[in-house]
Length: 233
Image (cartoon, rainbow, N blue to C red; front, side, top):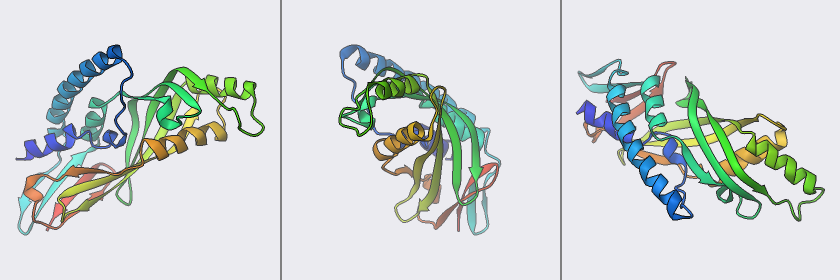
């Protein structure tokens, strides 16, 4: 039962599935996506197996149950879903185009208050920036923005989790809280990237089905420096 429960969490991609699905523009890209999905499924299965080793305790106690999920298990599940590809027009249909991706989870940590934080690397290619009609912005600004995005960098993500035990789901709300660019790094470009991601990619919370053993129980989630703990009374 616990193995099945871990597979539900891992195959759901835990946090990375917050991003909206992207429609591929041509057949070649679609074929590549199919291959990626097959590889993702295999990797997710492996991540689920690895997740079992991250459980500090999964036992029944008088009056309650607890499931401890370690950082390594969550990172493995996230990595199984990466890279996440999306088009620039997803962030801004009018002003941005290009191929973007988030990849490689770094510095994952649990925070107080049922939160977690981590960074993703991001890369971009074939970027086009249209600043027509933007006050005080010219062609040089568009070129600079293109260079900044194509240089790549990192985004810092933060997620909060809570249990909707009546609906038998773990709810996850992830947001971009910071960005750093390798070139032309500035608060303006950082804000542009994070605001676009939050308004387009991470605007919806995600729900992950709780393990069956918790159904019908009042369940709570707690974070420690090393684990996400699901507890049932």
